[in-house]
Image (cartoon, rainbow, N blue to C red; front, side, top):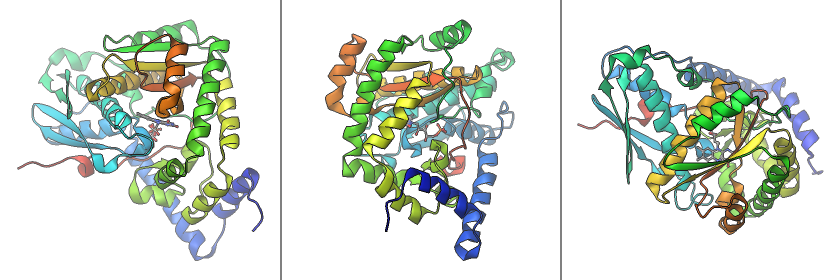
Length: 371
Ligand SMILES: Cc1cc2nc3c(=O)[nH]c(=O)nc-3n(C[C@H](O)[C@H](O)[C@H](O)COP(=O)(O)O)c2cc1C
């Protein structure tokens, strides 16, 4: 078999989309099911008005719209009338890229921010508490809360990670200031980098770490296992990284896995990341003040607050966590930032397009019923 190039991969995707035959038809049916699930998953948000427990199920659905590592959705929700608790689901861990569960806990922090914002918009004061084994939103009736309009609430169903080239523009002063304010957190330090020379320095570290990861067979196998190459695959599990959400064409799974093995290389991916970073307005690194599950969740909460504020302002963002995930790169990252704190998350941001959406499991699938 000849070498499959990136261009062939693109053409292959387009060609298969119109093919007939038994396999072609079932593949198209899978795409329709994916489109239906996108509409159902990402309905625009409304304050939850129904009685318990329906109200709380809707809040859980909003929580699940949060960013989460590899879209494994590593969470379990316990719903009580006066609170909702989010616990880790270690069955959905990614042990190669995240052996200590730092990003798994950060994902819970992202979900708790959505939950708290949605509960506030629905008439609760919704303070968040963190425990070693998860986090809790307390639902306390607060008449004034519902009347406060909050663009971050509307942003919950529009937010997505956009792994595409942005348009190269700098952010307006107002948008940059809005993001700075969203990042203001007593528990988490934010390092906002908009100077091009500093962005380039960080880029080099990101690319080096990316090379380390893509040369590891264990890393590649784990990543590949979470990619959903077609609408059909995405719709079957309603989790994972839907290929078109990363700017790649949808292809049948068997073909996607072949192509992944043949085409995805450190050099190719680095060229893509370098372009994406050059097109971005800036980078931001978040580092929690404590280095334990509570700190990791706090970093996630701060990150989701940033994401919602960015989305409300029409600013796109995506993660570039490679130098955080490759432990030997951390000292260099810390030196560049001038901090002893251990960074938790690295993102880029800018103005740009949107991409196809990832899916989520239903609230019912992630609520643990007790008694
Ligand atoms: C803690 C955490 C780590 C993540 N790491 C990466 C990453 O290194 N690279 C990447 O492209 N996306 C990363 N993501 C983004 C997720 O893959 C993304 O949120 C998920 O696939 C769902 O897609 P959506 O956010 O567009 O809905 C991360 C998200 C979180 C919360």
